[in-house]
Length: 212
Image (cartoon, rainbow, N blue to C red; front, top):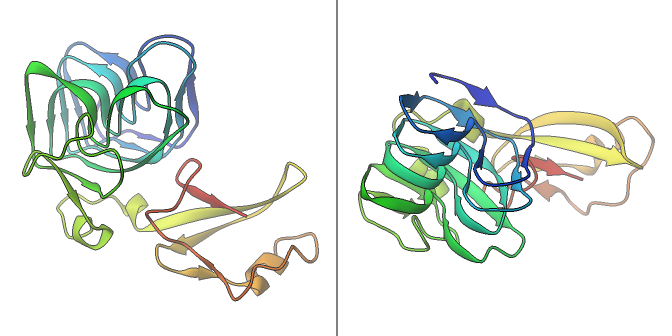
């Protein structure tokens, strides 16, 4: 798979669920991006790019929510060879074990190199950071890396009321949505938002989208 993107929610019933593929047993995934929430209702191996990979994932990125039980990773739930990947992920629910922003776990014969993720509670691989391999950094630092996708620079904010989508808008990370923006959403006054709703890249949830 080369230069593919996913924006949709993916829900798996059993083992191996990912934004690009559930299982990668051969070949290469390169230059792929995932922005959709990935959920696994039962079983293990949940990843932003691949649920299970026994091959190579290179120069791919993930900005999404992940929801499952174990072997959960921003790039791969269980990986083999992961290099030059970037991740900004949020793990939802009560994950039990093997959780990481890059991979939940790596095959003992596998390799990691030049992967970076925005600091969070889950570490790089199985809640551990590895310098130069699966390394934490700030949002500002990750934006200085090579091959940063455009999707990392902005957030899609969706205004909803009673289950109806009223408006969507693109906002740069670190930008602010004002009350005036909300009132232009198409159904009169929304609830007061205060002086503004900040779009923080580390706090965005739900498919890489902010919702109000």
